[in-house]
Image 1: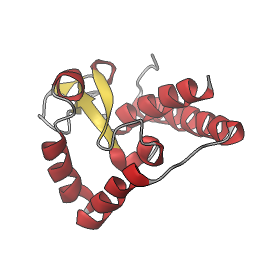
Image 2: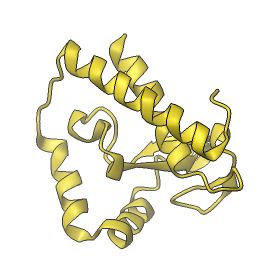
Image 3: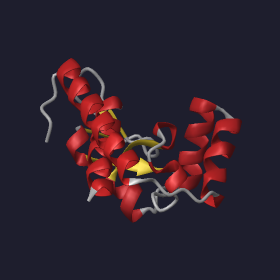
Image 4: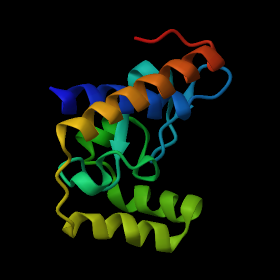
Length: 131
C-alpha cells in the first residue's frame, strides 16, 4: 500500500516538476507537448529496479506512447539524460539495476510524506490543480 502511495505522489511530483509556467510539459524522448495529466512519469531505469525507482534524475515526464508502447525509448532517453546530467550520472543510474534495495515501511511512509508535500507545494506555485 505504501509503495502505491509513494508511486502516486512521486509520479505527480515529477510531472509537475517538468511542467512549464504555461501548464504544459514536454515528453523527454519524443518532444510531444501535453498537459501533465496526459503524461506518465517515465523511468529510464525501470521501476522494478528499486535503487532508481524514486531517483528524480531517473524520472521525467514522458508521453504514454513513448513510455508504454515504445518501451520507454531507452536509447533516446539515455541520450537526453547524458545531455542533462552527464555520462557519469547515467552510468550510476544504470548500475542501480544490479543493486538490491529493500525499503522499510517507515522509509516508504517518509517517501509518501515527502512527495505529497513537494507535489502540493509545486501545484500551488504553478497554479495547477492536483488530480
